Image 1 (cartoon, rainbow over the protein chains, first blue to last red):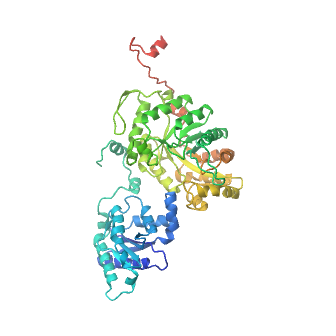
Image 2 (image 1 turned 180 degrees about the horizontal axis):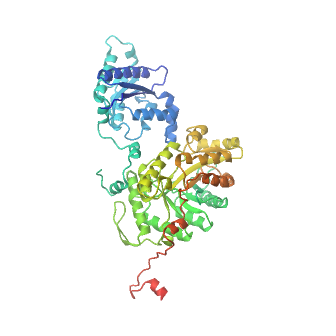
Image 3 (image 1 turned 90 degrees about the vertical axis):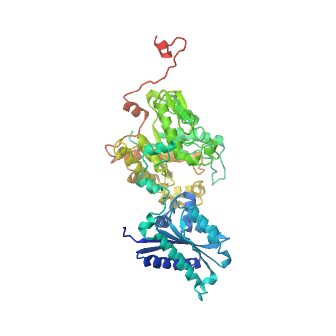
Length: 219
Length: 382
């Protein structure tokens, strides 16, 4: 049993300071920390805000490689055991900035990674963005999305009577914690696509590459 | 020679952002020849051309370009950057480059690449998703075509061969040296290492960490496959500069070209990009020092190629850049020789390959005369 902390990365794409997207990200980060902690695991929550990475993301699209803080953010996501991703709703979907971050991740980086999806908007009429935009995006990336998505309209930040938002936050965090089950379990999830990093660490012997070129796909 | 220093071109037809003028294909093709001849004149060792099959490039049919340049030069090695091993029939590659070998008395080698222009694959009847497999199968066949006079072969990606002899046979019985180029595919470094061929990293446009990771993998695997120590692996790197006597003049003149360049234009600033990649814009001394620093992460290596005719720079400017490169060339050679490991091999040439093979052997395959049962050779000898 490994003794390292469970690593959670919270990716949020709010643009204003402060933003309701970051507020929701903070709520989710804290809830996940409690939920994972409650299962007796050390947990380390890191926030990745995309706003300060906006220029670097545009540069990455043009140059093909990440610079500075963006490279560090991508590495944090690569090594995360679970993710919380939060976007504002722009034009009936996730924001372009949010999508760009997922566009530049190497294929396979999210394979099998447990994820909570969340979004904010001025009105609850946008809430299906979670299931019509974020969930398919993460499914394509082969992440494992927990059943509860957390949507917060502006009004949710005031309506504390029944604590409906907090309930959804707690439920999503609990679902993520259950999927994580500690670092060892996270590492033993579904088989992942072989990453470039893995290939560098243990190159496929050339005889095997020759066999695969000939159509043999058995490893 | 220990270290080969040269240039490579991708043959792009790009507007000059300072004048708005775009050269014609004819001008660009002729400029490519002028640049290659200038490269020889200033004492460079290698001229390499890319291969593209779509506008805005004039780099289709690289073998015609290389043969034409070969006829007008004496010493410079002609190479490619890269030859599309995925979409070009290896049978044609075997013929074409063996022919240029004979025409230029061995002044040719080539660099294999996969090509990243999606539609080129279907245009040539291939599937980009099979890129690595195509590179592996096609190159395995190419090697056999050069080393075996009579080839029976069957694979996945081209029609089978029975009793096939690729002609002409390689000059002096020695195939052209092959480099494998890749930016981020460990499988290609593995391929180069397996065969003991050279590995070239494009290097430009990428952070040094990319280059370092690929070169290290290639070196380790080269040793693993028993071709020598990791330090004895054959490494080449790209590079990119713009220089003027005065550093500030270089920055001022190059900035509009940088800002509008097809590859990285409208993205990072010139200052950020020069920090993040090997691009050096400054004085000849700065270019010299930066170039010599590549060894810090690539180790002692064999071939340095610079990209100089790009981003819409006019021919006159490119030729001036080559003059400036020629001026620092002796210092660059001296710098590369300094502290070079005693076991580090020289850059491969036709002469060194012939020597390693124990001398030149004519390997002409003479057809048998079906009437008399004799061969051409027997008739000549008789």
